[in-house]
Image 1 (cartoon, rainbow, N blue to C red):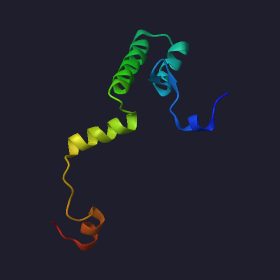
Image 2: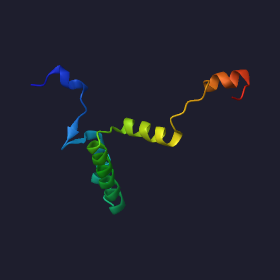
Image 3: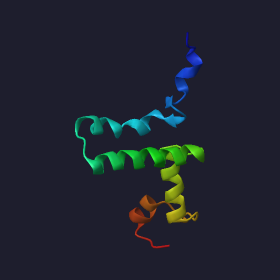
Image 4: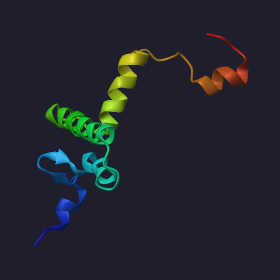
Length: 87
């Protein structure tokens, strides 16, 4: 019997997030080599993310921070557009 506390946890299959197995569904219908390879590479990528304790959302935020830098503009963009100032 499961407890209500487990409802917040992510579903896992063999220590990998269960959402990583979604690309395997089309390979059951359309069996081409490139689709099978894509599904396996997706599983490997999600496995690597799980190894470093990243979720997909956290990984996307991390990549955005790496690419965008950690500096913030002095004013929000909507303020700068409204007052036609370039800081």
